[in-house]
Image 1 (cartoon, rainbow, N blue to C red):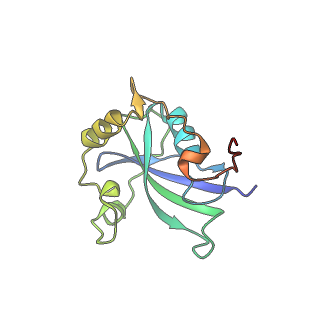
Image 2: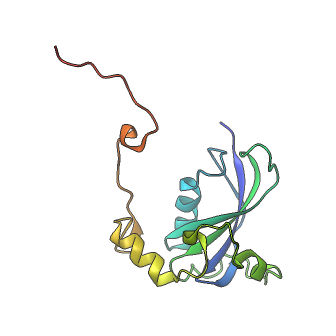
Length: 149
């Protein structure tokens, strides 16, 4: 299995709160973020959302290497965990981009994001509780089924 090295730039709303220590996760595909949020939820002590990919070293292949994400914490992170050194290019990272999806825009407030996710059943009592869905329903795999005669 291929790994990716993750660097997370963490915000609470539009406010930059710090950089998480780098960590490795698998799978290495950049679009796979479940292991990232699971790690950061535990590290920061609050639920997190990966909003966007900020940078990747190997931009051609789509997996592996060092990857930087903008992550939103849905509450104040545990003290002393993040490197709070100011990030000079933060405003350019969160600036409106014409091709950015609306769910990844900072114009969506923290309370709106949390409320939307709570309605969808993603968070209960402030904790991530994913719905367990059979792989067939997620479209990841369709197994042949025998049809009774």
